[in-house]
Picture 1 (spheres, rainbow, N blue to C red):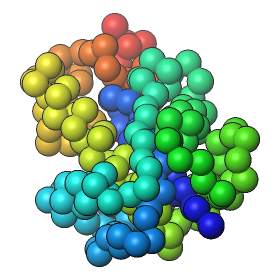
Picture 2: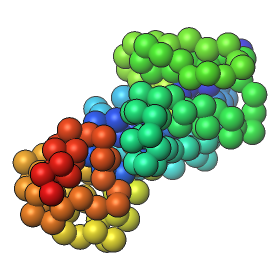
Picture 3: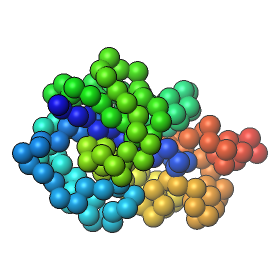
Length: 188
């Protein structure tokens, strides 16, 4: 049975896209060290992302922009990014397993697994690809918008990010529906 693991990265940050990945692992090419991306160092995630891309039967990464997040809310944007990633796969799985408690609207059999990124190898692999893709976007945004320090905090609402946001204002990549950004916009 071919299982597709799906996970997202970037629900909490104030800036950037939310990413999702879908992965079907090859049982004949095991990948050692898969785990929830949050429990791995950046160096280990980057190494494993290369392993996953090289050894998986199929993988795909998709996203929803900050603008889409503001239009449909972060939960719906996360589910839409997951749906996009699943639909990009070149191999059709028998079952889709998603980290969390909600499934995207897809035509394949799908089940949600709470803490799935710690329990299911395919979901762990998807969490790693989603996280490394999102981090890559934030490093690129750091070059485009150096004043916010995106490389340091990856868009999360750290004290430093909030300080830079209030000092420099809201950029095009900030999520306007998120409270700290919305409050700042309403005061201008």
